[in-house]
Length: 207
Ligand code: SF4
Image 1 (cartoon, protein in one colour):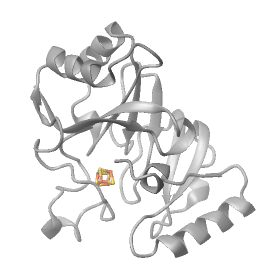
Image 2 (cartoon, protein in one colour):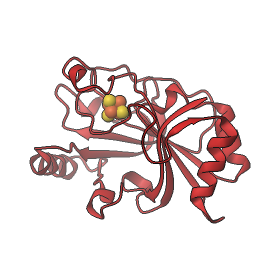
Image 3 (cartoon, protein in one colour):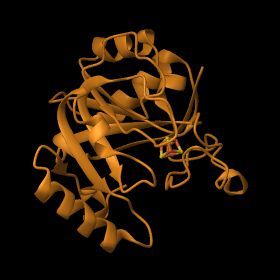
Image 4 (tube, helix red, strand yellow):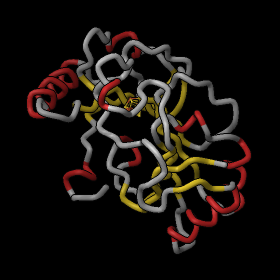
């Protein structure tokens, strides 16, 4: 069974697919942080702003494959331009070829937002990797690389030659969002192969 924190329909706010309607499936659990505040300081990834613990969110629960895709399809509610974004937590802890194939049967495009530490050995239509400093990046190709900026010790130029169609820098949210946004803008202005990604869904009050 798949452990899912929440499932909801929204507007994708980030990256090259921003503006597109999508059903987001947030899997429970991550391999870079337990999700518990007492472990944040010692976690590999310690700036996370997502609650991925448990299965108690909107439409959350433990699902069999067919149940999960039926739920997603019910939430979509039409037949056009169908898109699922698998996120987390770290979705590659649970996502597999069988679930992606079942989504295809319902004519969904499938996308993943991953930290890139677990190899993806099946086809998925859109791969977005957001690397976290201090972890080993094993997914080095895909559609978009979305780097949260700045991260202490991270050398952005190390990513420039990876095989992604789009390179995005996204200001780190939190208390320093204004300062981080300015730093990100300045970096993009000096290094135009990087594009600015803003979390537009937050601006319009979407989840
Ligand atoms: S890798 Fe992603 S989901 Fe995991 S702790 Fe970091 S930001 Fe959160």
